[in-house]
Amino acid sequence: MSDCCSKKEVISGIKCQVKNCTYHTESDHCKAGAIEVGYCNSCEKGETACTTFKAK
Image (cartoon, rainbow, N blue to C red; front, side):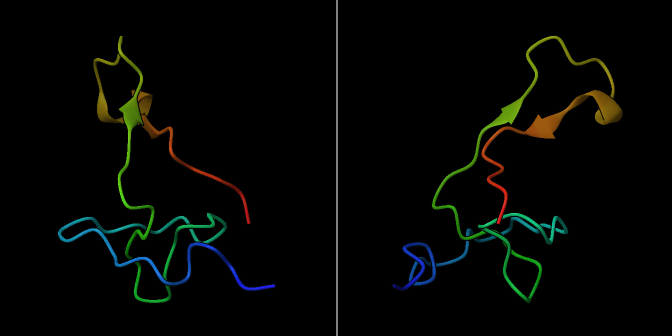
């Protein structure tokens, strides 16, 4: 069974270093197709997160 995400193109301009995410590529890009970044009440960089994350 092949990975359904392996054929998707990377999102141009989006770098990702979360190596345990399904959408992470070996070249440190994201192949999710689209991402969502949260949280709505964030005031600082450390309070944000990619809510598209899916563990491998």
